[in-house]
Image 1 (cartoon, rainbow, N blue to C red):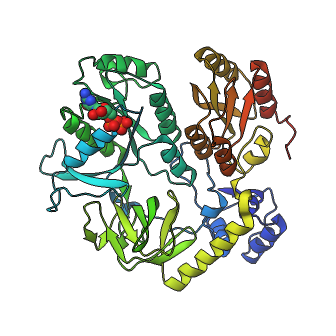
Image 2: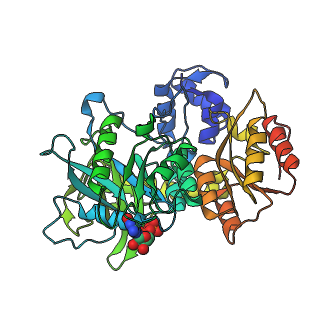
Length: 491
Ligand code: GDP
């Protein structure tokens, strides 16, 4: 069964005996160490205004409990209700490798561009239609998130929005793999997104697309031509060479992934971008399930409201938006943070009640809600999750020290916890590292390096631990002790 009583009590911040009493009311008799069924857990959660969800996407038996604020009741979709949906794609890569230019030409590849004649506005995402590579008269859609930036990507993920299906890693053929290419790769892998590579700038006189393949092979991305599983497409955002092929590759990849959603239910999705305009707060939302309609009552974090308008990137007013469609929504009574989930409620009164409750809870919990893993509290935080993994981001002054540290970390043996270095690189500790660590619940270890300006504060806000060392064996010993549960808690 999905959850042990003690764990559920922890998640709901209830005293175990209170939970046991609640269970008795339902006719379920269990002690703190016994597991209860999903249906029972759902009823208990519902009683306290939370949702209990068993994450099915993760491989293995892992049950992932969303942070407390996200436990709420949700409808289960039946297989026959699921219809194919468009892939959601994020383009990532090193600065100046051509992400913006590529996003721009892709937008212009839309075969049903509106009569407005290409007057588009930036809302944080856009959807294009493109012919299926084999069935040319069949138009398919792809949604691109056009807010490039690794920190933004992982900041959204930290708030629960793992919305990207496919990451297109852009690498300039003249420049090859660069530090932020690898950083992007770490972010995409941590998000468990499908990764494709666009080798850009192949028109450049110094272009060497084979070298890019070789460099990435060393990082585990082996192209199909060489017997691997990763799709590489040579493109030029300037001459437009290969751009159609890239779009076709995305569609083929999406087909293999069998992306589906139920369009016939109340909508649910995430905020991509938000802002305050003369007409009031706006939020670009990406619908993930169901269909969002004009007049629906939406709740999003502590804010709610009736949908007054749905506007797409061509400035068209829509009556509704289905799965994988991004629209700018007007009608909320506040500006929600990017990444937050939205849902649709029965009526405004219900939405207001939930919103008020959330505001109160948020105040009551304050910073506590951000309790993340540290080397000292490793075991305490792990008891409420199923995967026993210590995730680390490693930054050091030289490539030699990065390699030495990662090698030594890999050699640590523990039967209680496994260790995963989700990102390692030369350099200072940046905002992007903190976003990645926050989204993945990782600890950042720095060796002979420093923390960028302002990044300490950001880490504090996100509850991410950063530890700096000057001696390698001290770093290794601390990790060892942490994994053995030997470090004293810090207060
Ligand atoms: P971003 O930082 O990754 O968003 O990169 P940009 O899209 O801003 O592009 C950086 C520079 O590379 C600009 O001067 C572009 O004109 C240029 N660029 C982008 N794509 C190509 C390409 O395919 N070929 C060549 N030769 N230059 C390109």
